[in-house]
Length: 129
Image (tube, rainbow, N blue to C red; front, side, top):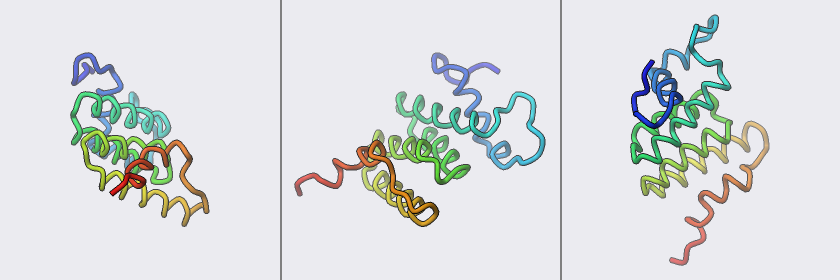
């Protein structure tokens, strides 16, 4: 497979191939050339970061959102989606995603997001009005 975006690397090609959704829903035998779940999630997160860096926010949100849907409690996936929203200037979406993740994490595991994730939205909530 040739990279879809020259200079972004093969993880972009792998990640985009996974965005069709079929591979994210697949629960049978592993398919040749399709990364297993942890690698798939890392690929989607890396794809989101690369696409964010190039200003391709819609595609970046799709990649990060796919990782969040696959593993809603995965902090790195939620962080990738929050970073996309921030890079695009959608502060309210970033805060809403953080709040959704925080509520889910508390309800499911009785945990709070890490300091690293809280820092992503901390400045948005503490600005002088």
